[in-house]
Amino acid sequence: MTTKEQKIMDQHRPDSGPGPGDPAALHILLRTSTQSLNIKGRCPGNIEGPNLTRVSEFHLIGLSEDPDLQPVLFGLFLSMYLVTVLGNLLIILAVSSDSHLHTPMYFFLSNLSFTDICFISTTVPKMIMDIQTQSTVISYVGCLTQMSLFAMLVCMDDMLLTVMAYDRFVAICHPLLYPVIMNPRLCGFLVLMSLLFSLFNSLLHNLIILQFTYFKDVEIANFFCDPSQLLNLACSDTFTNNIVIYVIGGIFGFLPISGILFSYYKIVSSILRIPSSKGKYKAFSTCGSHLSVVCLFYGTGIVEYLGTAVSHAPRKGALASVMYTVVSPMLNPFIYSLRNRDIKSSLWRLYSKTV
Image (cartoon, helix red, strand yellow):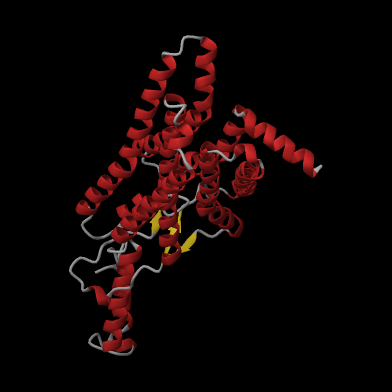
């Protein structure tokens, strides 16, 4: 019997009111035991579920508890968020306003920019608000919503990068057939299929997490509701669910990467057969920006994975998550605008019209 339970029983002895067999005392004792099980991280065991309090909220650990760092973190992430949204909006505006950019490559790029805006908006505004209000609480429904959007959008990013790699493969390896193959109907179909696959990925994550009613702890070792963190906190036997998560990761991770690697294998083979060095440079420059974004996306994801696996400190894992949830979407517009003459000239014309 815990100290807290002993105090409750002492308060209900004959010299202080109702006896130990009083139903009120037993009710208080059971409720206290239930809360202790949920709050201190112990799973219910053989106690029946209806007698337990369900988790109604979680606590995000954030990046730091140091009060002196809070204004710095607030300003830093607010600036990064605004830069990301503005940069990606400029890409979308440049593509939509310039008829010369109404091509499959820029159609996919504008969809990627829109996805990046939604992706960073899923996590960063909540973190900024938590820093400002000094609160780390997120409701159960809010956590599941954030997790669902995160799983969907990170998969959408992955799928769009694969589609863009296929677009570059057709443009370089089959330039004469490019307008025929990459017609508007196929482009729309590829984006739609990417969205449906992403929704399916999010649905699978939801179905797995919704099986869990009770959790070992209410503290999530990240600044957002990471699906893997929620799975680790579940009280139920998660072996089968872990297998399912790994299978999902294999399908939605390995297949897109395989598609990208195959596309670039064909692209490099085709470029090497070009006789002139100028022709090789021109061909490679058409996919240089996309290759940089692919390396950034998967590179930051690998850094986050290794950072979490090597370091058992929760905050270091949260800092590693910043790389692919914040840094990658922020740098994508700069990569495309700095390395792409069409985007730069379109933005310049747009600026000249407004001024």
